[in-house]
Length: 277
Ligand SMILES: [Zn+2]
Image 1 (tube, helix red, strand yellow):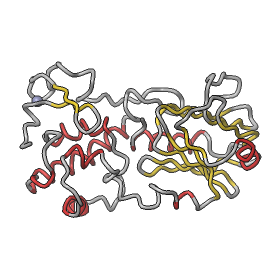
Image 2 (cartoon, rainbow, N blue to C red; image 1 turned 90 degrees about the vertical axis):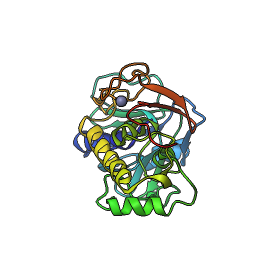
Image 3 (tube, rainbow, N blue to C red; image 1 turned 45 degrees about the vertical axis):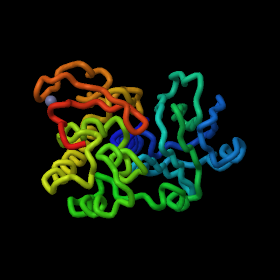
Image 4 (tube, protein in one colour; image 1 turned 60 degrees about the horizontal axis):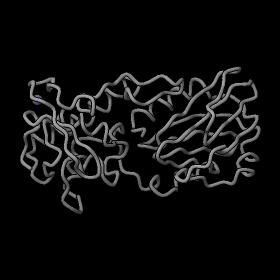
């Protein structure tokens, strides 16, 4: 599943590659998928996208907005899979859940994995969608200061562990189970460490780990197991990952462990992340 850095990377590439291209034909999926959420019927999508020009793309948290001028915007949200640009004359994937064929012969396709929203809105309406409308501050927003972060922790309605804070209820939008592992390692905190037990110093370490890790993954063009607009994998290799279980921790050499916790696997160093649980 894409997390914030992958969306930032895709939006940046779309602005370079897709912007200005005119849609000859827009099509929804050729392969039914139970968990792709569309808000338009096939014929309606085709009619509304025909002749539109791709405008600016931007991301927020785990959502990606693409202007289709005049008057519309495409919204991709909470999804994984692949979003690919295909130069003229190259082949498309056999199965796709959205296809924009451009007048110059090039194409854009999106194929989802797991689930995701693929929706078309009149310009300005996408920001009213559930989960987009009330989205909290994301780690790359200027407002995501240490003071904001402490305020978020102090106003949590229920007790959360560090993993819960990073991955549940989009309290910090854009983070997911993958990037959370290296954030917790960077902060030296065990996934089960309760947030209300964090000292001020630990809060600061966690805040810094969130912002630094997100920036680092963006600078590498996303994680190594996700693909960019050209089908090229990102260059960020996670330190705490299914591939590093049982291997020595890069800091202290202790074997990296795996536990199941809060609906997914956690990978951590029992020595470096030996906080109170
Ligand atoms: Zn260690």
